[in-house]
Length: 383
Image (cartoon, rainbow, N blue to C red; front, side, top):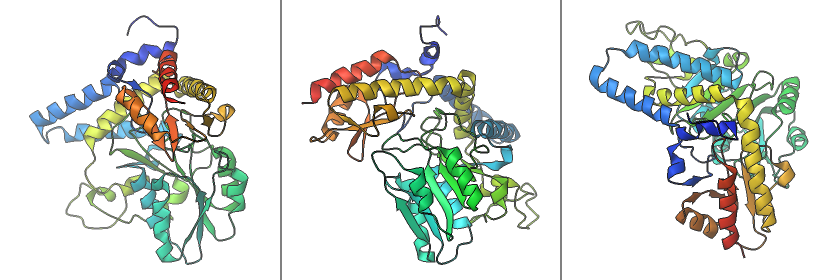
């Protein structure tokens, strides 16, 4: 690494070659993986081409190391509470389809949610299960309103930790503890916070957490994590099965449906070892830096962007003072933002448009100068 700059986290900037091509402020969409992670993945691909099945056990052992690191990042008690899945939607769908529902049950969620945290619950309508969405108000999801929407037939409260189109960050501990008191399962989509913000699923009384690796975890697309607390596992039935789902998975001649322990029962077949290698290296890098150091950095950069957009006359969703995640969104009182996003992209400044809002999501290796450059360029476009 080069000499330590004024901001110590910028010592890791050389790990991200994307900075040589773009001003990249779109980590809430897809994060560029660090250099070490892509190199490790490529090295494994080359090794596979040379050795085939010969060292499969080594890859399996490494997957368990990554599982343990992921569990630590989540705040899980045990690695076996974590399963590898393809993405957030798959993890949440496994939960939706795996519980024993009765007609008249209901699920409480939030309005303006990302579709992956809505469709799995809407599917249950065919079983007579109602999905109730509490509306977003002023860029916030009111926890009291969420809990007030629950009644004696509420089985689940489902919520994104950080909202994708506002950046609003829920108080998981307060909601989770009240859900635990009422015996309501608490299911959380953690994709927009895990890797940038500290999480402790145990302390927050989270029963299920699902998230994909390609955002703040700096991992690949098609590689995600599903946390299922041991408290819930006995009530959650696997809805698919394969050789990997069972406790005797390598005894192919023994055909007996005896489920693997913990969340690993939700893994059906061969793991995506190339994806796990990349994700594992990224999680290791995040561990070296420390989430406690990353959190204030991303919030400070997001707030800088929020203050600048407000100065340009844009309305920051939730207010500048409400920025508590790596995501900040803003809208213009009379103009659409999509043309500005397209023009910024033409100038190699990568942001996003979500629900008619301009979304900016910097990460720890971005600089204040990059945020200021984005704001200066946006200022040329805003009337």
